[in-house]
Image (cartoon, rainbow, N blue to C red; front, side):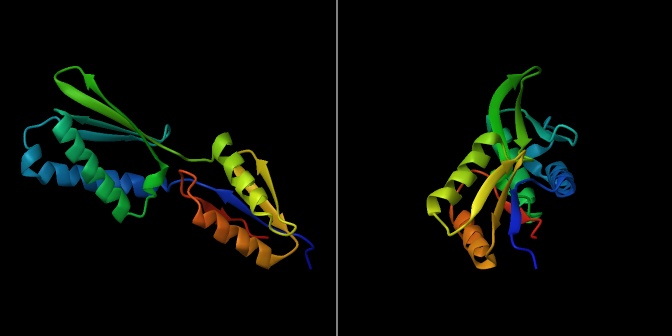
Length: 166
């Protein structure tokens, strides 16, 4: 029997699902009447984890972003993990927007997760930051389940994933 049980807290998005959602959004944009003859486009750079949206004006940009969000939600991509950029003017009378994907816990969020567990004062539960994840350990499985329930009840700005149960 193991004397200490643990799990890891991470975050991320499924890049294949993002790719599928972008493809579906592009098909819908090609079919929609309000986008006929416009320069609306969505490009997904998988290596950087960034989405680039281009539209004719602010109104079409909002519509384009709404279409993309709808497709992402339907595909099960956590919208909390989107890092929405500002709408900026680009050449050729177009506007551009960059949307980043949060693929890992940053240091600030990892500290908040660790602090939330320590503030709850769960019996013998320890949280330690290990790179882009937080390892939570305890001799009691019930206390670990309490820690998961506690973390699910709080908002850290990203969707948390729990895995690597040992």
